[in-house]
Amino acid sequence: MLSDIRSVHFVGICGTAMASAAAAMRDRGFTVTGSDTNVYPPMSTFLAQRKVEVNSGYAEQNLAHKPDLVVIGNALSRGNPEVEAVLDRKLRYCSLPELLKEFFIRGKRSLVVSGTHGKTTTTSLITVNCNFDCHRMFSGIDSERIGYKD
Image (cartoon, rainbow, N blue to C red; front, side, top):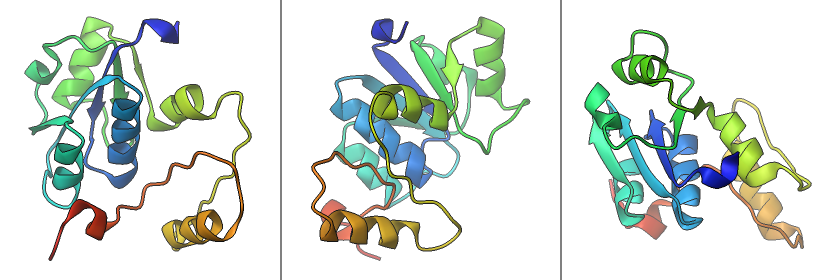
């Protein structure tokens, strides 16, 4: 089922978690595109450096390339032109948590940090101070690494 997915489109790509997942999918060899209404640094820089094409604004034509999977951000709902196009065209879609489960977590042991404040700091401390042999994914963006300055 998932083996036939080659291209993924993220609707609401400029959220930190969505952009991080999009970059991780690109790193795994998928063709990745996305769209959002608020496209600006540091997220636009982060995605551009990873060669992820981002459309500014939501529109049915953003799905003209017929992606194999569409990830719909949790801030979006019925009435959004891309959400409606996905449903009308019966395109395969999922949420970000579903994508993470299927492509990154299934069959592995995971450690999840959640809460309102301090998630990125806590995750950074865990990965730096614990001797884990692991792959890690978290949604904090290091502004130095992407060359972004206020």
